[in-house]
Image (cartoon, rainbow over all chains, first blue to last red):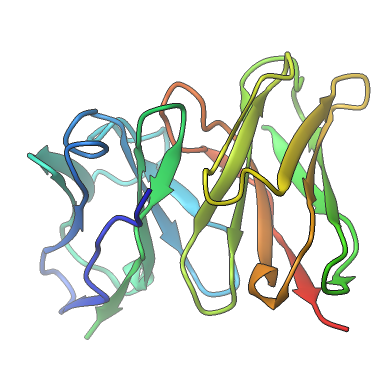
Length: 110
Length: 118
């Protein structure tokens, strides 16, 4: 069970859109539409942002959207705001009743 | 709104056993799956395992030989035991609701730092 691959950092200017990738294998991301995304500000617990690949929990801004193509899931943040600066993690079902997280991506708002 | 609170020693000696409890409020533990996740300082998240209220468990294969998760429905609590700890087990430990049915956990506790040191 390997960690999902995410870019270490992504940056953008306010108002722009950015996309964070999460690359797995045919045993996890590629086989199931069960990717979740989390936002984590320094010193805080992760916040549930996306589930089942593209669904948003109640209260999460529609500026956040999720998608998947093959073995890679993506989180897009549109209309980037200063408050979006945080670490982001993907999480996928990996079969055999196990979960696997990505290594995390630091988003910087320039 | 469901709330989760981790509790337990913040310092554990190498080779000893780490033991944490998560108390659930604002809802019954007798539904859903309940997870433990950890995060070493400055590093990413690692799924440890989850339990269903019936007591059925699933663990990260890399930790399975050292991990036990249990549930006490009468106290609305679930617990984590990690044996034979080393410095590599130093982390913030989070309890959370969810993890079953292939979905990531949705509600998380604030986390508790456990340091392994003599």
